[in-house]
Image (cartoon, rainbow, N blue to C red; front, side):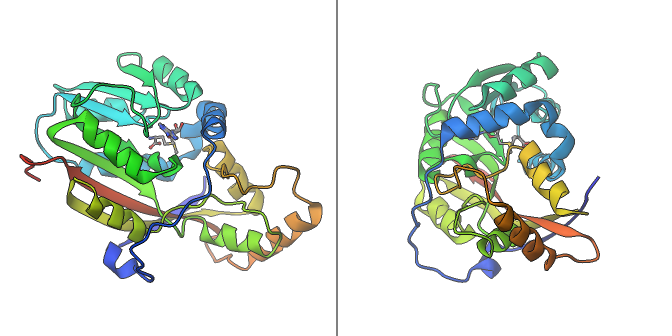
Length: 287
Ligand SMILES: C[S@@+](CC[C@H](N)C(=O)[O-])C[C@H]1O[C@@H](n2cnc3c(N)ncnc32)[C@H](O)[C@@H]1O
C-alpha cells in the first residue's frame, strides 16, 4: 500500500494571484465522468485511501445538531452513508451520484439506504428537502461551482448545512509538470484555485462557517503504480483538452523521466490540494 502524508495551511496563506475573476475551465465531459467512475466502482474503495480519510474527517467536523434529512452528493460507492447515519442516528440518509455503476455498487453494499441518479448542477429534487448536504471529493467534477452552490442552496431547508471537500489547483502538480515537458496535451484535470473557490463562496448566499486548504500526498514506488492508482479511483483526465488518441512512446518516456525529478525518499508524489468548507443557509444558521 502507498504511503501518505499530509499538512494543512489556512487558505489565506495559499493566495498568490488575486484577480477576483473566476477563469473558464476546460469543459468537463459528464458522460465520460460517469463512465469512468462507473468503471472504477468495483475497486474504488481499495485504492481511495485519501478520499476515505478526508470523507471521515469531514464527518467529524460537521456540527453537533440533530439533522432529519441528509443527502450525500456524489456518494460514489456509498461508504459514507453508514458513517453519516452513525453520526446522525435519527436522520433519513440518501445518496445521489452521476455514475450508475457507483450507485449499483452502493445499493449492493448498503441496501438500507435510498439512492438516486442525478447531477450536482441540477439536483432532481424539490426545493428545501434537506437539513444537511454532504459531499466529499465530488464537486470538482462539475463544470461550474456556482451551479452547485445554487442547487445546494435551493434544496437545503433554511438553516441547513452544506459540508464539502473539493480539489483545488495544485492537485497532481508534479504530474502536470512532468506531462508539460512531454507534449502539448492536457493530461491532468484542471481545478479551480483555492482563491477562486473562496471568492465564489463569498459571493454565494451561504454563510461560510469554515473553509481551509489541506495538502495530502500519497507516495508511490513507481510511475506505473501512481498512474494506475489514479485510474482506479476514476481520477484520470476527463476534460476536453486531453489527447484523444494514444500518447506516443516518446512522450511517455519523457513524462516518466521528468516525473522522476520529483522522487524523494518516500517515493513519487500524487498531491491533493483539498479544500474543506462548512456553509449554512441563513438566516437561522448557528454554526
Ligand atoms: C472521487 S469520487 C468520491 C466518492 C465519495 N464521495 C468519496 O468521498 O470517496 C467522485 C464521485 O462524484 C461523482 N460525480 C462526479 N460528477 C458528479 C456530478 N456532476 N453530480 C453528481 N455526482 C458526480 C462521481 O460519479 C463519483 O462517484
